Image 1 (cartoon, one colour):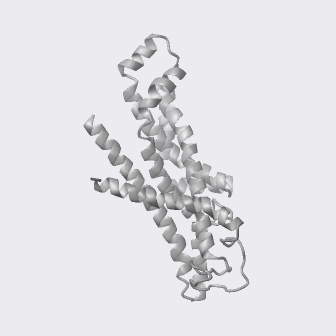
Image 2 (cartoon, helix red, strand yellow):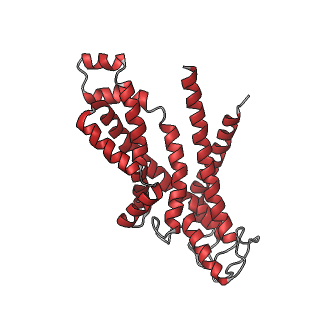
Image 3 (tube, one colour):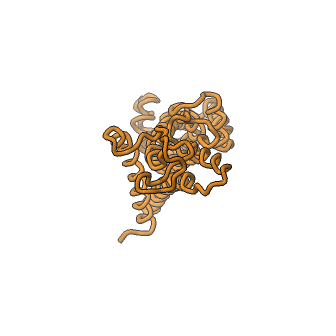
Length: 279
């Protein structure tokens, strides 16, 4: 019988998989004409509420809200996967090297990473995004700078505790070089918690990229993105019309995808914690 955490994790996986399907299906459905172009400016109707023709209604520019909501999943996944992958590829090797070598290298890296870690992720990402400019990859780089210290700290601490194990000392005794020890002996034993960090960072990345889009940074305006759509919807409120559909659907997409990834991360945390307790 599944525990509560396992059930919640299953729900999170289902939600995340649904948004992944949306991201994959969006360009395919557009190519065959089953989904409207999210950037198409419709001459009529403008600000139409949800109907049989436009399931989520239309916004002030005449965009189909349903198409933009579906297409926004693709951008969210691209930035999320790219930013967390960059963070992992930089933070993990640096954490292992710092924890294994120690000395002045460790002190410098810990100082830099701790300084970055103390800054709010949105503020740091906002600063980097302002410098590098708009773009999917630029947004991913801006987010990854905030997440690298998290991977570094966890991997470094695990490396420090693992490098004193007998099998590491045995590898050193037979003359194994640093690269061999890090890749062959240390890596398999210190990367077990990475799926947990990855999913929790991915959930945070959804909120951060939406915040950047809301502030007009991160993603170009011609790319469908939930945060930018929320900003456009709030700007349209000045007309005094009741246009709830332009805010609720992008906002609901952000909320659901964040909850889905968070549930996966929490489920993985519980699973790894129970394994450590059993061992």
